[in-house]
Amino acid sequence: MGKRELAERAFCENHAASIMAKERNGCKRTPAILLPDIQKACVEHGHGGLWNSMGYDTREVVSIDMKVCYPASFQGMGEAKPYFERFGHPTHRMVCVAINGALPEDIGTDFAVIQEWEFDATCHRHPCLVWKAFRRCHKWQLGPDTASCLPHIVGPAEVREAIISLKTQKDVWLPETRDQACSVIGKFTQGSKADGKRLTRRLVTDQGELDYLVRDTRLSGTLVGAPQRCPLGHILTYYDGSQPQFTHLRASMLAYAHINLLSMLRRFEPEDVVRVATDSIYIQKMAIHKLEGVEASVAPRVCRCFCKPTATLMCVACMLGEPFLSPVAPAQWRDMGEKLYMPQEHAAYLAEPAFMATKRDLPPSTAPRHDDPEAAARPRERSSSSARKNPLSSPQPIA
Image 1 (cartoon, rainbow, N blue to C red):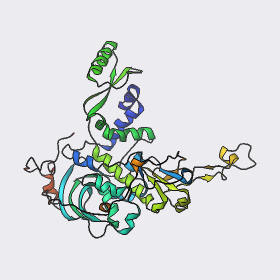
Image 2: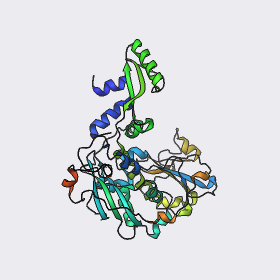
Image 3: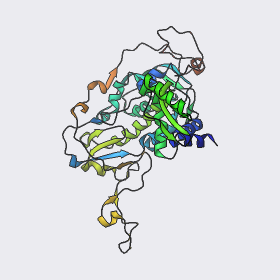
Image 4: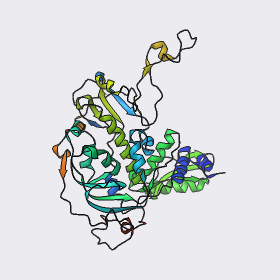
């Protein structure tokens, strides 16, 4: 019996898909010394979203949603494709390098500390998402995000440091099943839910051993749910040891999700946009015409192509004259008919002048120069105060 067949039989298809995906993609853990900084760049806007307007009629608002946002973004689909072809995903071999000036065009930046920037006037149309992220992520920004913003920055962006990957991965694989693909991505940050502990699923075939383990894990508070029956015995789920973190993959995936989101957001005026979340935008119905002819969007249409009026069997859409959704590709946007909610005061967002232009008083980086990658890859002596800021040795200890 193969590894995947055994995993499917003992655990579940999602677990087996995770094993296969990590092996095929050669996933390696994030270097422990870089983990805190990369986690700061891993900005997600949550399901609640940010309200760009506090007064609107839900009957006049429609929500457009990006299909399979996370799996599609991990594979660089949609309008983020040019940036994915340029950056890909960072591998586990990452180092911190000094720039102390304008961001070079030929550097494969995965994460960067932007010290000074000023956005042009056109960026002020959409302050409700990315500009807030610049302030929120504690200096570190995602490389593809930074590159996509450069055309809207007045003059060169002053960059202090960057975390670059000595290799990049642009050919990635995920299972075709959406649930399995999401399960694989979810494992990238699984340990963060339990203080870095690993969520362990253990096959137990002996009833006496099972009783002992259940009692032991209950006493320690690490048991997750009740044991589940399977063809080979029982599966016991509990937290144990430390969970490998793949934060660099999670963060880079979010960069491509942000680019897809911002590319769609820029097509609307501020008064058109009501609310913005990670993979959905609430807009006024009167503004939906701006998506006509946009390849990244699929609009519902009345079914008149496949069912003839004289046909004996007709689809429900034809009989009722209601629109139906054409086939939608991953990372394309469509109206899912989502139930709309009234805004919440705590989620209201008001743009601040600091989001448009900022100059941070940061000391020059003492890391090796970005144009000397061999020096960056070599270990060197570091003081304890600068050890985390200048992770230079490779390979690094892993989380």
